[in-house]
Image 1: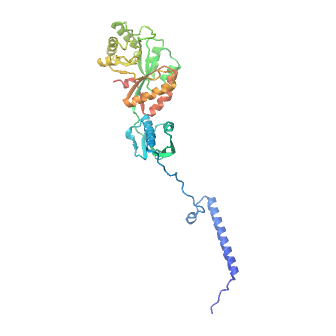
Image 2: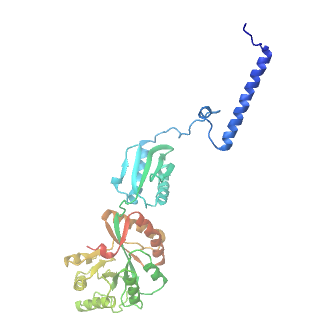
Length: 383
């Protein structure tokens, strides 16, 4: 005969169910607290059932910018890359994505700062900038009026050729003194060409120090100007001089400064426009195997034309970087110099022995070098 289990009264069964349910909840709470305090994840079945679902973080919906406005912003970006001497073949624009390959050494902080400033003109800006150093790339969104113009990627590459032009800077008017300003120019760390006026108290000492610091030296030959004062100290070439006197003065200048590779004119707007006088000067330079650099103090100068007819290596100054003794002007001229170096492959520029010129060169030369400008001796750009 089968024995039957005693039936629990309904009210007692209900009580047991309630007790067991409460126990399960308490145990689950204790387990979750233990996992969290230990820093370990809960089991997969627990993790799969979060108490409150959290939607993934996403960017706001993309609204594309007006094509004309987007094109204006992209043009600003492309022009600035060109100023940093990034060639066209390193830039690609698909219409929605824009990429450029830049040297790893390119000063990106300066680039992005300047880009932001220029984009203000078209109500544009960069957003969501991400520097991915692992993959050597920078990503950003180019927006115009809060609408997407382009997804931008800058690929940073080491070993990328950065030289886009050569610049030979001549610094005139050495010889008057040998002081801290002269020493700072000589120790600047870039291959400046030092042009020294012959016959001054410190001319030979400056020449010796310039040679010790591996700078190329020119004779800064005084020549008669069209207007204004000039000094005839035994070296100045005047329009009234006969050929013998001119040749003697040129020889005397190189006797005093034998390390000089050539000559450029100090003043001389009257003499450099005189074909006969320049022929005598340049013939003597050719006899001594020297070069000539026309400072271009007169737009009517015939010096380079005559030099080429004599097959004498010569070049002309393309701009004075400190025609105004003003830092902003000097910076602007250095940017123009860099543009000429890029467009022509090389450039010759002249500055002077001045404090403001030195300070701006100290500031700008590293930046221009990072943009691809190679600073060279004058002998590297004379044909």
